[in-house]
Length: 362
Image 1 (cartoon, rainbow, N blue to C red):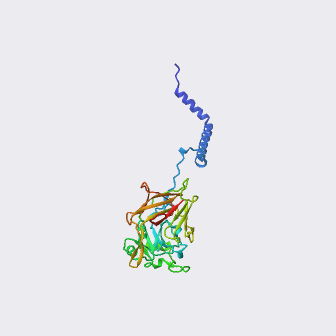
Image 2 (image 1 turned 30 degrees about the horizontal axis):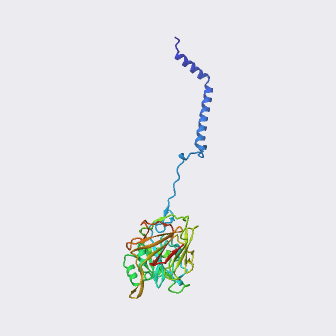
Image 3 (image 1 turned 180 degrees about the vertical axis):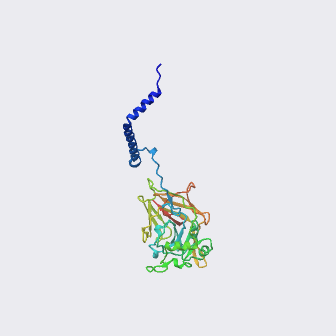
């Protein structure tokens, strides 16, 4: 059997390398240059084509964070202080006070009879801060009860005896003009007492001075709104006292809001036009006129329950309202006792005296 002479093979290889040294150097140099060029292209010029990537290889996009106002349920900017102070302002509604300022931007409005059939509004604000609000007038006991459910400051000019005793007892956040005159001013285009105004530049400063910077409360259950397929409440009438103060609403399916009318005419905010809440609620209350030291005053049972009709999305839901304590929040439930989610936006609540025919719709 023929054997391989390893020493002979190695001698032949070394002889070949010696005779072809120039060729080997040229080839080796070319390989080094090509490798360097390929690496340079890969790291400097090459950009991968991702247009054909499958969904599995793409990073998922982060969903935007949605933040909602506790008072209105409306979408607000990320980073908004959701627990900033709620402020309630007593706004007059006598004919001499119309059109009012700041009502259209209120998050929640309570409407009730004040005296002699004249209604007055408790307008609650949190994230919206109009710079002209008024005319501002005096407070009554039942407005204090409603404001307490929102842990709200109360901006007003005096009040009747029992309301003043209550609002000044140290439990409530009192922003009475009598003790904070610099927060209010009198306009020259209206006669007194229908000419007192304030602004949130002043109210926020007063709240901060008094340490009223945070409101902790339970907001209404809220939901996105959408017109129902077959609306059954596109025209609403709320007879609260007399023609000067009775109101009506016309439903607009395009905006999913209710245009408010009062005394037969559009109820306008002086600066922003017609008032258009997303939700209108008529809550039936025990209301009476009672004798007091200074004459007579209206009494409304607020820590109670009763019938309520909730208008939203073009339909009417008949249910109940309940408020179990002064600081407890008022709630609205359907006939089955389930809380009704209210459409996001302004909620207008009218306290209507018990009786037949006070609220009608079609």
